[in-house]
Image 1 (cartoon, one colour):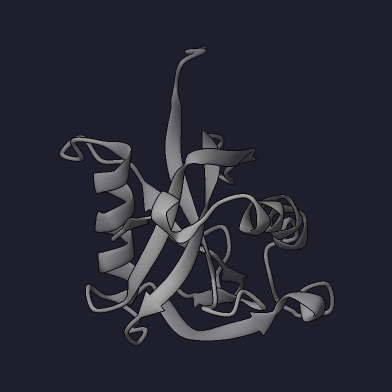
Image 2: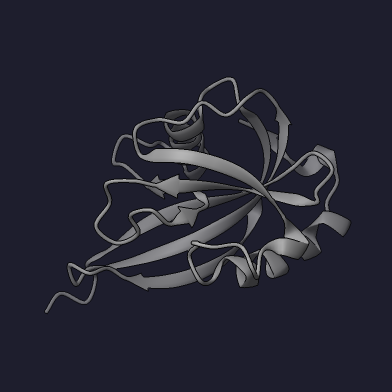
Length: 152
């Protein structure tokens, strides 16, 4: 068994401009979470020259280049995920705020919703750890300022 075989799959937790809602997108045609709402993001690729570049590439691919966010790359909350195929993934979740632009979903998603933070627990279908991840990252909104964010 190879103890080093895992993937680094970045997730972006996008808060609305007023920080009372979270962007969730419904996955489609996927083995592990078909029809389930999740954060945007995906695996680092060999061509990504940095974590920020990988985050930007994934954001552009999944919700469009015109959808601008400010991301805080200094802190993540990390989750280990065991895929159905037996592989493992490290999922770092990054705090981000919507700056401007509309969501333009790619073929990986069927729809999106801005879900109020106080409605996350009852919102379904979603990946189960979404409320927990949001509660960890929401603490950052009172600590960081807009100048701490990198626009992608």
